[in-house]
Length: 213
Image (tube, rainbow, N blue to C red; front, side, top):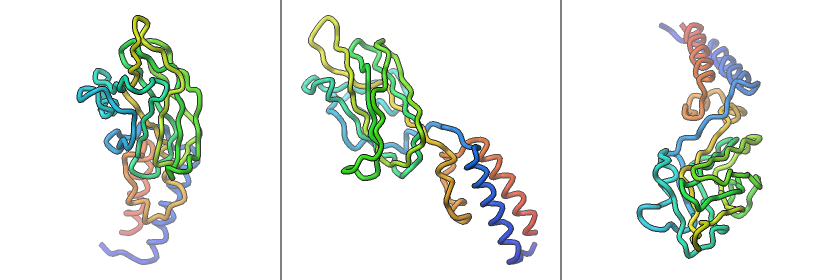
């Protein structure tokens, strides 16, 4: 098998065609892997069994519970996604308890001192174990700050320990593949690719290999 220089341009064209096709609607909103997310700041937890990491372990039975020394309305968590990604959705799960978050907001940004995008007043049903999902126009961000704007305390006592059963971040798989060079396309993390993108990529690589033979 021999490789000819003239065919490299054809392969690059196919890759660019692949990227353009994705930008025209091949992408889907997909969950961003929790293992790529780090908590860099949060309201202190209630103890070793209630750490904030519980809300990123994929298990609704483990919970992040905040300390009772901080008012529930001041609860927040700041996430580092590890890279700039096209954030397009966020899901929050309430604890399976009576201290409930009833509303929250989001800050999305790249510079911690300069928040760029604000998602406000996301309503959560006031029920134990309830959840709320918000989807929005994809915004390239590395950091997300989740903060409580509405809270319901325990009806039978002065308890003030909200938190979360789980957090989920969603990204737009196609936005991250636009405006990049064909060579760098080979280095993209498949974690942000959708099944449609995988199929398109397989087709492109097969066509490129055939032309290079």
